[in-house]
Amino acid sequence: MATKLLLETTAPFQGLPELVAYNEGLFEAEGLDVEFMERGQNAPKGTNTNATNPNLLSPFMGHASTFETGQAGMYNACEWGNYRRVQDTNVQGRQLGRRSIVAYGALVVAPDSTIYTPQQLANKLIGVPYFAGTHYLCLLMLEGFL
Image (tube, rainbow, N blue to C red; front, side):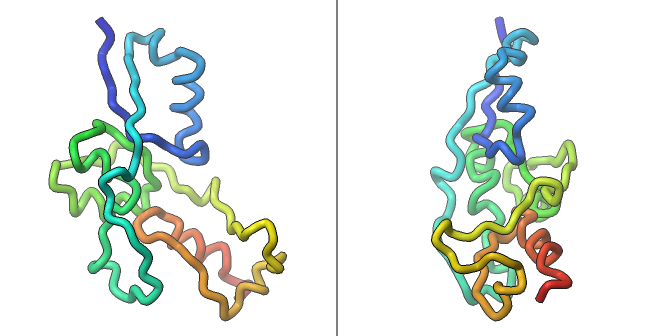
């Protein structure tokens, strides 16, 4: 009988190895029955463009919300954002591997945007999620341009 694993859904830029292994039947070949659980179904929702204190924000707004509510046993997340989730977990979650998202990140604008260079983002409101590594990555990618 295969060992069942419930994994929180993941995006290709973070979980490509798991997605390929799943699609190629590699988990099954190792005796693992992997089921992906939809991420964020019970996560708090909302946008706060005036956030100045990350302690007032939930680290479970996207990543780990399914894990934290007991619907998944594992999830993928960037190490930077995950430090806070491990600190605040109510289910004694632990961080087992570390990989920074900086290798996969990008600044993205809408297809019809007039923005073509990072310098054009000066004095513009930029949406960046906390506790996902992207808040650090965004600062790193814009450093030197703005």
